[in-house]
Image 1 (cartoon, helix red, strand yellow):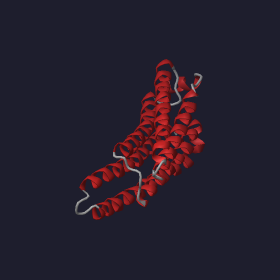
Image 2: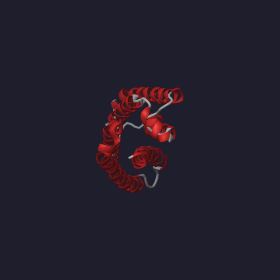
Image 3: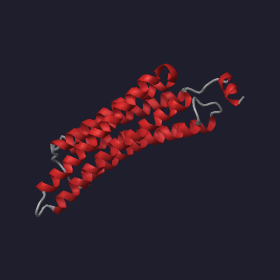
Image 4: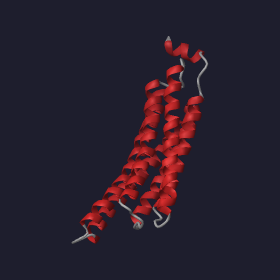
Length: 214
């Protein structure tokens, strides 16, 4: 009965706009972080832009939570609304951590594995930005949404391979007296890999919403 009643009530679709704006902030953060990985002056030039994108995403996350509290009828379950925006926010929060680690360890040169990891992050960000607006018409878009989530999953698998290869290469090149350099470089590479993991978490949540509501 309650489900039938919900269908008769006007829906609050502003959530989809907020999700889309958050996804835009994620793309900006991903592209600015990738630019940092070009090294040299680009590190300091693009670092503030990563922080700004994360601040913007945090503000939108607060908007979503506030809107959820004051809205009687939501597009889908409140738990899903909160979890999805949290998973998305986790991704850009992890970008901020990676960017801060780069600056903290004063890294200004990056091996190709870092560039490949940055490319994977940007790819995931764009896939997520394409998937999120499709939730507004979930049933007809279910196939495309699942396809995009699967692409994120494949990128995450590739990123795991890049991370593993990068760690092996780092270990070999930092022997025998480059322990501190290895620790710093490993930390940043780990942070980059975790970003892709957070995108995978967001994709899993999106798939769960589609399964539950289509």
